[in-house]
Image 1 (tube, helix red, strand yellow):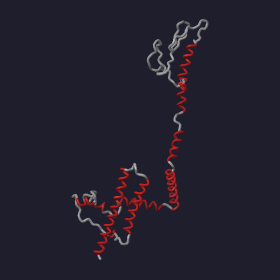
Image 2: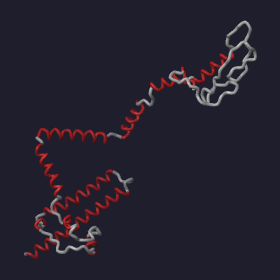
Image 3: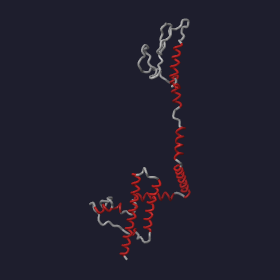
Length: 270
């Protein structure tokens, strides 16, 4: 009778080892795909791998719950030899995960209960769950279901709709500040907010104390209007002498040059 139970136990252990090996190989293959073939991996393939792992775990559970399978809970594993020296056979058997069977790793590998910290956390969670009433629990369940439904709805929406919404939001969002634009126009057109200090720059020849107003653009220099002939304007060209009988009147050529320079400096004509 005892020999029969031992043979049955050995057969169950061998079957369990083979099933666990299949599950381990499937899990390793899935991890390899996630790390190296993630660009070609599609969601249906991921679901297939999860389905394969789930089916193998269910097979192991069915085998453990089978009536013909002896109860492994009644079997006790006792470490007979503990050594600090590396064991080659143990290294090969565990695929180089456990090279030494010492007193440091035995409590972790032969543990039949969770860690004390994990057990304490489970007790706290169980106590908090028992304090929550049925009404509060139902409200929390409804809130969680609503959040999951909204998330699934967003995930199931076509990508084109999301792209269209993001594009519309970008178009409706202003890309400038109206206040800054008005201040810039007022400063350029009317000199509002500008300081009275002369900007740094080389002096214009023939007009000491007058520098260029704006680099890279038309320069408006000082014009002296007098009664003498042979007068020249700062816009570059010779100015006709002032006609007699019209003292103090600005020549038409200077007016034209000033208007053209002002028009070119206007922000809407740039």
